Image (tube, rainbow, N blue to C red; front, side, top):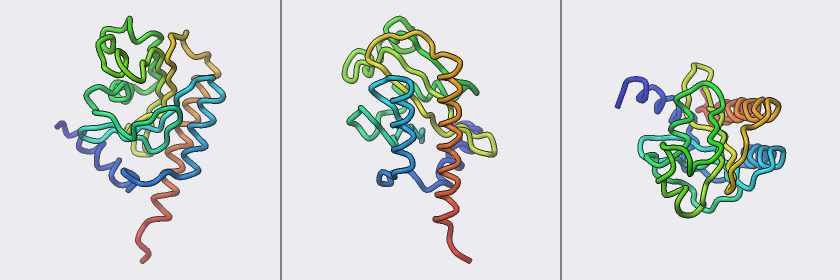
Length: 165
Protein backbone atom coordinates (compact mmCIF):
# COMPACT_ATOMS: atom_id res chain seq x y z
CA UNK A 1 0.00 0.00 0.00
CA UNK A 2 1.37 3.42 -0.94
CA UNK A 3 1.98 6.19 1.57
CA UNK A 4 -0.75 8.19 -0.15
CA UNK A 5 -3.26 5.35 0.29
CA UNK A 6 -2.23 4.94 3.95
CA UNK A 7 -2.90 8.64 4.57
CA UNK A 8 -6.19 8.41 2.69
CA UNK A 9 -7.29 5.45 4.84
CA UNK A 10 -6.27 7.28 8.04
CA UNK A 11 -8.39 10.24 6.93
CA UNK A 12 -11.34 7.95 6.21
CA UNK A 13 -11.05 6.16 9.57
CA UNK A 14 -10.83 9.49 11.42
CA UNK A 15 -14.51 10.03 10.63
CA UNK A 16 -15.58 6.86 12.47
CA UNK A 17 -18.31 6.36 9.89
CA UNK A 18 -17.58 2.92 8.42
CA UNK A 19 -20.13 0.24 9.30
CA UNK A 20 -22.48 2.70 11.02
CA UNK A 21 -26.28 2.77 10.62
CA UNK A 22 -28.09 5.00 8.13
CA UNK A 23 -28.31 8.68 9.04
CA UNK A 24 -30.99 11.00 7.69
CA UNK A 25 -28.55 13.72 6.63
CA UNK A 26 -26.65 11.35 4.32
CA UNK A 27 -29.80 9.64 3.05
CA UNK A 28 -31.20 13.05 2.04
CA UNK A 29 -28.08 13.77 -0.03
CA UNK A 30 -28.39 10.59 -2.13
CA UNK A 31 -32.14 11.15 -2.53
CA UNK A 32 -31.53 14.68 -3.82
CA UNK A 33 -28.79 13.53 -6.20
CA UNK A 34 -30.97 10.77 -7.68
CA UNK A 35 -34.02 13.00 -7.99
CA UNK A 36 -32.30 16.01 -9.53
CA UNK A 37 -30.18 14.00 -11.97
CA UNK A 38 -32.96 11.53 -12.75
CA UNK A 39 -31.25 8.22 -12.01
CA UNK A 40 -32.47 5.13 -10.14
CA UNK A 41 -29.29 4.65 -8.05
CA UNK A 42 -27.26 7.07 -5.92
CA UNK A 43 -24.60 6.22 -3.34
CA UNK A 44 -22.24 7.72 -0.82
CA UNK A 45 -19.41 5.25 -1.31
CA UNK A 46 -16.42 5.11 1.05
CA UNK A 47 -13.32 3.25 -0.12
CA UNK A 48 -11.32 1.31 2.47
CA UNK A 49 -8.58 -1.29 1.86
CA UNK A 50 -10.68 -4.05 0.34
CA UNK A 51 -14.18 -2.74 -0.26
CA UNK A 52 -16.41 0.16 -1.05
CA UNK A 53 -18.96 0.60 1.72
CA UNK A 54 -22.12 2.63 1.25
CA UNK A 55 -22.89 5.14 3.99
CA UNK A 56 -26.08 6.01 2.14
CA UNK A 57 -27.68 4.25 -0.80
CA UNK A 58 -30.77 4.52 -2.93
CA UNK A 59 -31.80 1.88 -5.47
CA UNK A 60 -29.16 -0.72 -4.61
CA UNK A 61 -29.42 -3.62 -2.15
CA UNK A 62 -25.81 -4.51 -1.16
CA UNK A 63 -24.24 -2.50 1.67
CA UNK A 64 -20.77 -2.96 0.13
CA UNK A 65 -18.93 -4.39 -2.85
CA UNK A 66 -15.30 -5.45 -3.34
CA UNK A 67 -12.96 -2.53 -3.99
CA UNK A 68 -11.33 -4.32 -6.93
CA UNK A 69 -14.55 -4.04 -8.98
CA UNK A 70 -15.63 -0.58 -7.82
CA UNK A 71 -16.04 2.30 -10.23
CA UNK A 72 -15.42 4.66 -7.30
CA UNK A 73 -11.81 3.46 -6.89
CA UNK A 74 -11.18 4.96 -10.34
CA UNK A 75 -13.14 8.13 -9.54
CA UNK A 76 -11.06 9.00 -6.46
CA UNK A 77 -7.91 9.14 -8.58
CA UNK A 78 -9.05 12.43 -10.12
CA UNK A 79 -10.25 15.77 -8.83
CA UNK A 80 -13.39 16.23 -10.89
CA UNK A 81 -16.48 14.23 -11.72
CA UNK A 82 -15.65 10.95 -13.46
CA UNK A 83 -18.25 9.92 -16.01
CA UNK A 84 -18.77 6.63 -17.82
CA UNK A 85 -21.51 7.02 -20.43
CA UNK A 86 -21.79 3.32 -21.29
CA UNK A 87 -19.81 0.89 -19.15
CA UNK A 88 -20.21 -1.90 -21.73
CA UNK A 89 -18.05 0.18 -24.10
CA UNK A 90 -15.39 1.15 -21.53
CA UNK A 91 -12.35 -1.18 -21.37
CA UNK A 92 -12.01 -0.60 -17.62
CA UNK A 93 -15.52 -1.83 -16.88
CA UNK A 94 -16.96 -3.88 -19.77
CA UNK A 95 -16.20 -7.23 -18.06
CA UNK A 96 -16.94 -5.97 -14.54
CA UNK A 97 -19.56 -8.11 -12.72
CA UNK A 98 -21.38 -4.90 -11.70
CA UNK A 99 -21.90 -4.34 -15.44
CA UNK A 100 -22.38 -7.91 -16.70
CA UNK A 101 -24.55 -9.00 -13.75
CA UNK A 102 -26.83 -7.27 -11.25
CA UNK A 103 -27.17 -4.27 -10.95
CA UNK A 104 -26.28 -3.94 -14.66
CA UNK A 105 -24.49 -0.59 -14.46
CA UNK A 106 -24.32 1.28 -17.75
CA UNK A 107 -23.95 4.94 -16.72
CA UNK A 108 -21.83 6.17 -13.81
CA UNK A 109 -20.89 9.64 -12.62
CA UNK A 110 -18.95 10.09 -9.38
CA UNK A 111 -17.68 13.19 -7.58
CA UNK A 112 -14.81 12.57 -5.15
CA UNK A 113 -15.42 13.13 -1.44
CA UNK A 114 -12.38 15.25 -0.64
CA UNK A 115 -11.46 15.96 2.98
CA UNK A 116 -10.27 19.42 4.07
CA UNK A 117 -6.67 18.12 3.89
CA UNK A 118 -7.14 16.95 0.30
CA UNK A 119 -7.65 13.20 0.78
CA UNK A 120 -10.22 11.58 -1.51
CA UNK A 121 -11.97 9.00 0.68
CA UNK A 122 -14.87 8.01 -1.55
CA UNK A 123 -17.49 9.41 -3.89
CA UNK A 124 -21.00 10.64 -4.21
CA UNK A 125 -22.10 8.78 -7.31
CA UNK A 126 -25.15 8.42 -9.51
CA UNK A 127 -25.80 5.31 -11.59
CA UNK A 128 -28.22 4.26 -14.29
CA UNK A 129 -28.96 0.88 -15.82
CA UNK A 130 -29.07 2.45 -19.28
CA UNK A 131 -26.40 4.43 -21.14
CA UNK A 132 -26.61 8.20 -20.84
CA UNK A 133 -24.80 11.22 -22.18
CA UNK A 134 -22.47 13.15 -19.90
CA UNK A 135 -24.05 15.18 -17.16
CA UNK A 136 -24.75 18.81 -18.00
CA UNK A 137 -22.47 21.43 -16.44
CA UNK A 138 -25.26 22.21 -13.97
CA UNK A 139 -25.65 18.54 -13.00
CA UNK A 140 -21.88 18.15 -12.55
CA UNK A 141 -21.87 21.27 -10.37
CA UNK A 142 -24.76 19.84 -8.34
CA UNK A 143 -22.96 16.51 -7.83
CA UNK A 144 -19.77 18.34 -6.80
CA UNK A 145 -21.71 20.58 -4.41
CA UNK A 146 -23.51 17.57 -2.85
CA UNK A 147 -20.15 15.79 -2.46
CA UNK A 148 -18.86 18.84 -0.57
CA UNK A 149 -22.01 18.80 1.59
CA UNK A 150 -21.32 15.13 2.34
CA UNK A 151 -17.85 15.97 3.65
CA UNK A 152 -19.28 18.89 5.66
CA UNK A 153 -21.80 16.47 7.22
CA UNK A 154 -18.99 14.02 8.01
CA UNK A 155 -16.97 16.82 9.62
CA UNK A 156 -19.97 17.79 11.80
CA UNK A 157 -20.51 14.13 12.71
CA UNK A 158 -16.82 13.82 13.66
CA UNK A 159 -17.08 16.87 15.97
CA UNK A 160 -20.30 15.56 17.59
CA UNK A 161 -18.69 12.18 18.27
CA UNK A 162 -15.30 13.50 19.43
CA UNK A 163 -14.39 12.64 23.01
CA UNK A 164 -15.26 15.47 25.38
CA UNK A 165 -12.30 16.95 27.22
